[in-house]
Amino acid sequence: MSRSEALFQAAQQHIPGGVNSPVRAFKGVGGTPLFFKHASGAYLFDEDDQRYVDYVGSWGPMILGHRAPAVIDAIREALDHGTGFGAPTAIEIEMADKVCALMPSIEMVRMVSSGTEATMSAIRLARGYTARDKIVKFEGCYHGHSDSLLVKAGSGALTLGEPNSPGVPTALAEHTITLNYNDIDSVREAFAAVGDQIACIIVEPVAGNMNCIAPVPGFLEGLRELCDQYGSVLIFDEVMTGFRVALGGAQAHFGVKPDLTTLGKVIGGGLPVGAFGGKREIMHHIAPLGPVYQAGTLSGNPLAMAAGLAMLNAISAPGFHEQLSAKTELLVEGLEAVALGHRVPFTTSRVGGMFGLFFTEQEEVTRFAQTMQCDAAKFGRFFHGMLAEGVYLAPSAFEAGFMSAAHTQQDIEFTLAAADRVFASL
Ligand code: PLP
Image (cartoon, rainbow, N blue to C red; front, side, top):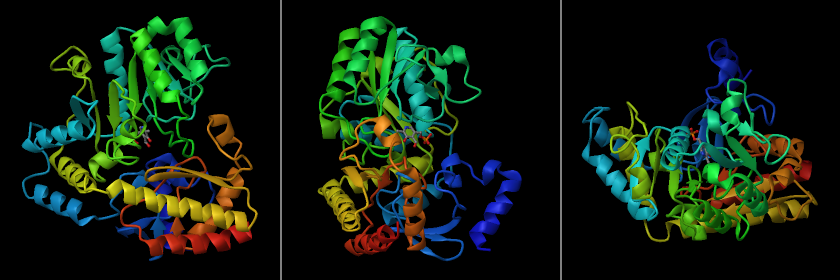
């Protein structure tokens, strides 16, 4: 028995399912999750001392690779001064100034400790600001696990939303309208029917939780127009895309300006951080300036701020995102070529430093229904084949992959050579 297998058995005694977040349990691909003990640059090392080229990057934050010296040094320096004060610190101003400079739609920003907190708080703020209860979200987008957002569509687009999980009150789910991503007509219809009751639209500007699906031309622009027309708040959930698809996030990449933005992952440099921010006029409604309550014991934690700020400064280097994009392109185009060589039906997507792998005959995947038609079983075989070759992909057919600055051309060549053998065996 490997050490990971033994640890997984031991973990299940006192940890539900042996993991502290469900996707880590490998349910989507079968088998036993690996337990990791060390990471460096583009590599993860498991408890059995196997090395893996890592395309998960802790689910997005590790855009510089693991243990980036700039980030580690900043954390060490902050550590010498204390691990938290629960009171204002100078570095929080630096962080806020930096975020507002990188994303000009953000005029004020509040730090929180996770992406879930960021989206939950942004929804509350939008509801408080507009004095409306309904929210619009899209099937296949994930915005964390708060009650209003764990909701799926009812039987028709405009029927009442249904809880996606036991424990979410039906009465709350009824306020969430779940529509089709990349289908602006469905959004137009919803607004025509109940637009004056809709507080906000929340959307992943590139969907990274149903594999990786870019917005079709006109989709984000259409959401912007509808929100303007009906006085609703447009929230871009850039927890995944922020600082990754471009320095200024998806809003810079696609040139559409949201009213509020939620952030996470990269902004924390690998420590637990999230943030939400946007128009000054809306942010003025947050406590203590305004009546919408939001708070956090660990918000703006100095270690987390130091790590995040060091990461944001490092990725602000000229050409950083161009290089990241070029490497992502090299990887996914290489994978497509290898798959084609073995006649495996396969296509990819990419935006900046994130990418998707689809086992499908379809030429392009732009809708949730299409991503659900992909061959998840074949992905599972590909995943395990790559794992055995020393390449760590997200253990699910429905998650985006992430490139880092630490990945070298040799790492990508190593990955493609491994994929060549694995595609041959599928
Ligand atoms: N929003 C998006 C787009 C995400 O991808 C995630 C997490 O993957 C979240 C929100 C929730 O963030 P967290 O897991 O930090 O609570």
